[in-house]
Image 1 (cartoon, helix red, strand yellow):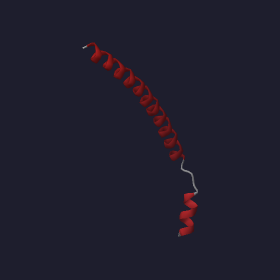
Image 2 (image 1 turned 30 degrees about the horizontal axis):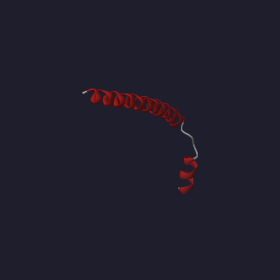
Image 3 (image 1 turned 120 degrees about the horizontal axis):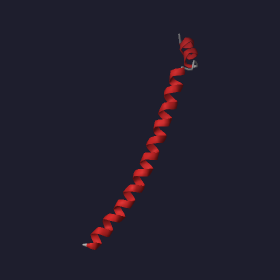
Image 4 (image 1 turned 45 degrees about the vertical axis):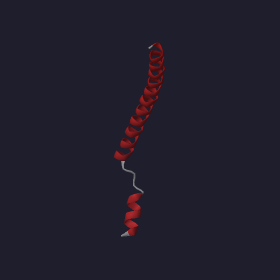
Length: 55
């Protein structure tokens, strides 16, 4: 029985490959979104400081 399980573990499920690829794409998009939001956050912090000084 252990041998059968080991043999099945070696079989590549095509659905897994597709899901892995989709997940990698999603992660990449989310990383880009995080980077963009970090830049926006930095700009907003600078603007906030300028407005505080203007008061």
